[in-house]
Image 1 (cartoon, rainbow, N blue to C red):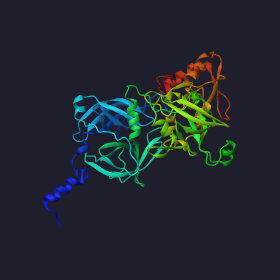
Image 2: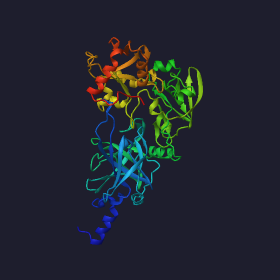
Image 3: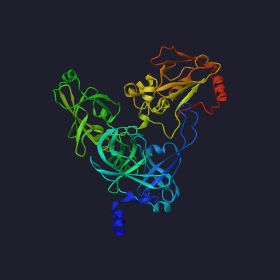
Image 4: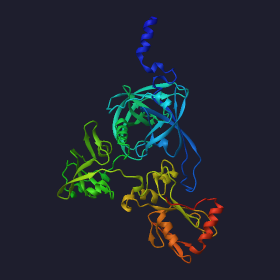
Length: 492
């Protein structure tokens, strides 16, 4: 049966934006931009040099007159950022306002006022809930929009792709028409509900950095100073073993999780929390045996959501803990744990890795970016002693202390036989414990020219490594000339 012409047109109009996919840019063109980034990072195998420049691209969502929301990792080591209107291809250089590599969120703004005035900001929806219908907006290479509909199926806490911390995410059941095309904005009733950072094609599930995390990020910037997401500074573990529960004086059904770790100098440490405590409450929320609380918006939720997303840096957090037969009320003032405080930093961006070369022996500070040379599965592929110290870093180091390793040996006439020595954790140099490459360089510099420098490694059957001080200057000159290394140290 054929519809009358007027009825057919009315049906098309009622169907909504999915039927206008043939229009370049579509109605989303003023609000979603292409973002092109030229970036150049440092080589963590050869820390004295940079890797070749690379191009990266993604999408940005206009959320204010001069603000464009982008994934934070897109901006890592950026040397040039450009934004492009999808409809007509007009480009404009942009500047980075803020990048949070822990949460994988960033803000940029267009340099040209004329470009910015043609953009249309979108609102941000406060929150989503299970069952909410959402819309994903993608674009074909020619700029034609592709609209997909889905529903939020869960809200949970995990480490989303591109982030280095655990945050609230939305899982959305959706069949993306273009598959995984990088960062994809999701909307609900015309407002941004999240940015997709990964897509499981087999399960047809998208993972979103959701609007509550985005709003936290933006609220932090309101005073012109970005503090970052807060941390309490403790680790916890479920108490499933009946014998351990009896030892802790807990009856079946008693709430609480075991405090397995307290980071030195953290908010929890300053409040008086200790390893072995049982955390029973955070503020007025009871903590169950799985480390969850009953969130008023999402129901059972990991306590890290309460700390990171529902609180800002500087906010007080009331902690009720059991210690033996005693119940303690502790108040922690939440703080952000800066990257430089980590013994094994989660990332090193915007500066070169710290290193020093001593007679062809290359010493570096361990970071997760260095571990990343073993690929995405570095936790199983990297040497076990390195992944172990990453896991146990707070048990073996204080905030600000680093893990120094001998990463490789550049052959010289003086170090023949040691060429295959690599990725060893340094324990002492000349009998002194070193917790940074700066300390290592200072110990070597203070030694007399007739002495031998001795390096002792952790968890190693190797004897002390001996470097003859008298030939060090000659060996360093050989390394600089033979391997064309412009400087033999980067200590800042």
